[in-house]
Image (cartoon, rainbow, N blue to C red):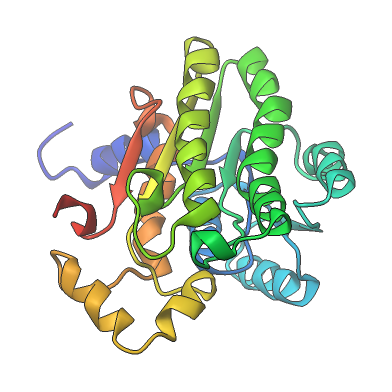
Length: 265
């Protein structure tokens, strides 16, 4: 390949980042970071199975992907419901074949002072934020390993590594998710499966709506970032494509901050 050879450059990029022939399951795929990751992974060539609880939003997200030429299917399910979780495991591979890429982006964010959290708050948060990623990983991980290729992308939080803003049980679940990632990497990396956690900063999504409503919070969070702004879902497109494909062959068990420098100081 000669310098500037467009064909050679394109082929090199395809080898690193194309997801053609792959199938992804993306939880929380109807909004926020999950939706952005689903769009990026689909745009890179993968078929996408979207999962979310609310059917109207799910159908709208699937429609947008379809308009972009992505092969897409949708499953409406509540990951806090064990029956729904089993149904997802049973149905997800029936649309486009076996799942190669699992993105765990769905989350429950109950943020109250620690002493005000109820047992129900704890159970609801752990079921969605930890038990569901664990269960989906336990189901799809060994199947990926048997085929010699798989990618698990867990979406964590600044609370995976630090505490602020009433971390509470949300912080517990996200710290545990980082630990789950390491355990998955230890179990299956030698069989071609890579598992990593993405740690966002303060991102303007529906999940952070309650924090955004606190006067001055949005401005304060932006000021803490080294790039001078808060995150938006589109900031997670590139990392999703990288971690989903062959370019991430030697990246596993990691907690990768995508936060504009938020965590550095």
